[in-house]
Amino acid sequence: MTLKDLIVPMRDDYGTEPGHVNFSRSSVQADKKLGLITDSGANSILLRSHICSFKDHFSRLALSDLGCYENRLTPNDANDLVIEARQSGIIPVMVGVFPDFYQNGYTQSDNMVCISSSVPDANFGHGIGFIGYQRHLVPHQVVQEIESFNYGCMSLGKLRSHPSIVEPVMRNTEVLYVNMNAVRKADAPGISGCLPSGLNSEEFCQLMKYAGASSQLKAVFIDLNEGSTLSESETTLIAEGIWYMMEGLNMFYNDHPSLSGDFSSFIVHHPQYDDDIEFIRNEKTSRWWMVKTGDDTNRTYLACANEEYQQSVNGEMPDRLLKFLAHE
Image: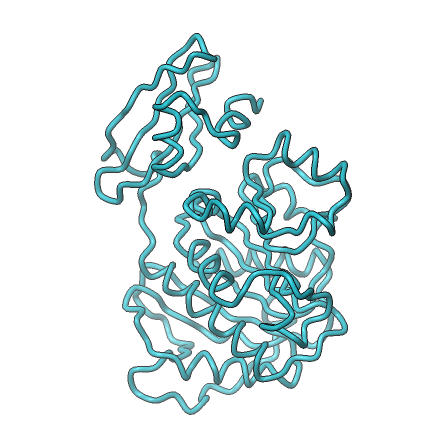
């Protein structure tokens, strides 16, 4: 299965005006390349038109319209599309009906982030970050497991009570899966499964921007849920989310410790640990990481917030950092 086998080309012109976002099929010199793929629903043209109605702030980003697919993707199809797009240096953004993500290879990614109102009952990796889930939709046993072991998850309540931690949790996103049912009903009334509670449109766009700013982003999947009836409201919101993800991509920083040496190191002694704990801060971006050194001297990093560093200095190690230190 290749892009040419599956994708139906879309028209090139959506009435783009000068200074607005434009799709280009030509090779463009840019730091990042993004390719949009959608289903063949009636709103696919409207989605593209909304994107093209927004202002173009993206000198470091090239956007291409890769077309649409007419049939439901199998997990193998989706995987082939991602691989082929990545070989061309393109980050695919797929909008439409998707296979069950919790039963295919994407769940093996250590840096996969799922924005969803719920969490699968079982068989998910501790490395997957579930963002914006609502506890009354998640089995109690799963909630306990997440809160005991997973340092990359944030419920809707925690997201709102600890907003400074959201960016670090999403900083190293490789694969982003968005189920639009995470958005509240008032902002996305046509999406099947939305509840009165959920992310508001501003929070949704902010999460998309954080994902776009990841230096490791490889693929984005936006699930509309079967049974949804998209209107102007939902289509505009999805287009806004894609625009803010583009803004994140346009300003991304190669400041991960494995990519940059411009760091200052800070050593914290915590009464619960015999060994000192190292934090590092990038001098250009002022973003923080906690460092864990294994028995083989390999260093692993957890993106963290300045607030979490300050808590650690004061002897109040945040739960998220404790989970990271305890994780094998």
